[in-house]
Image 1: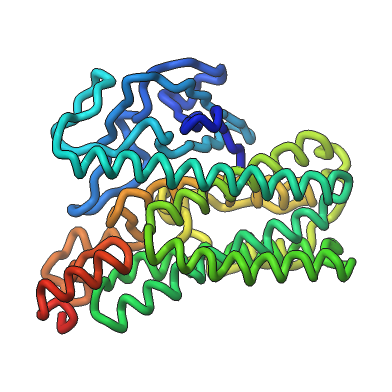
Image 2: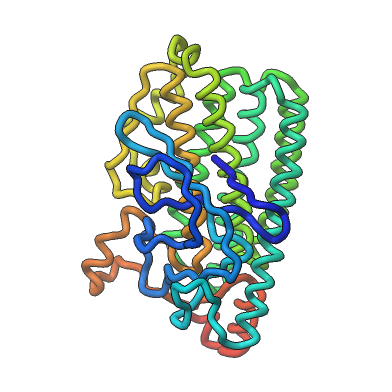
Amino acid sequence: MAISICTMGFGTSVSSYSNLKVKTFENTSFLCNSKNPFRFNSYGSSRCVLSRKSCRIRATLLQENEEEVVVEKSFAPKNFPGNAGGGNNGEPPDDSSSNGLEKWVIKIEQSVNILLTDSVIKILDTLYRDRNYARFFVLETIARVPYFAFISVLHLYESFGWWRRADYLKVHFAESWNEMHHLLIMEELGGNAWWFDRFLAQHIAVFYYFMTVMMYALSPRMAYHFSECVEHHAYETYDKFIKDQGEELKKLPAPKIAVSYYTGGDLYLFDEFQTSREPNTRRPKIDNLYDVFMNIRDDEAEHCKTMKACQTHGSLRSPHGKLCDESEDDPGCPVPQTDCVGIVDCIKKSVADPQVSRR
């Protein structure tokens, strides 16, 4: 996915859009669009606050037939999610010192994420400059790791009764399922033919898993932002490949696993990870290898949007969860339970309120 990165001086550029029909880059001091593409629940927030110094914003708009694929970048280290006290004048809210501390924590988190992502990209660029399928194999082996790392931590929280939200488990599993099929496609294309590529990808994946588990336990916001950075890079990589090799790809047949996954009868999980879309609104066509890579690229864009939504704590909603909004008395609908952010916060709340672990 297209990683739009400002300078490392605690600044990342932010991909944003105000009108899908505009196909030019625009500079603006606004970070947040008034119409958020994500569905938020009652305990989520979509407000944002702008920094004193405006950061250059680039809107990357790509078109497939008549539908544009828009990839948004999350708030930059100099821009922070705010509260009701924030305005639209570019000034941060003047609340408590704890809010100021949180701003600096976000700056550090995102700067570390960008440094890590840039380092990995440079390594991959060096090793896989002219070996596209092998690079994609490594990317997809790594890309699916965060989602089952998230699920591992969420299951731990469930075991202690700290946080039980089925939507997160459903969406993250669907994301992992999608990335796994990307990996199967790359294997069918021969991306795993060399033992070195398999060795490198698998060992990076093991390290990445434990790193993500620790990061997610300490700061889910940081873990989601890091995953967003990885998905941006995947989007950018596939998009460049399509532009460079598009004509050749149209002459090649689609792998069987791709046809089965994208045009199969049961597309519930395919709809589930695309939290910015209504179910059944995207149904890919697979006529050749070009279509396969177009759909993989667009999948990465959807992952990126979902990771952005997850950075607002408690905001993620399953695309299939609308029925519960319309029937609150239905016992089948999940009831929000104990809410905490990271393992430190969960332990603190469980100690302060002994009833927490029994809920």
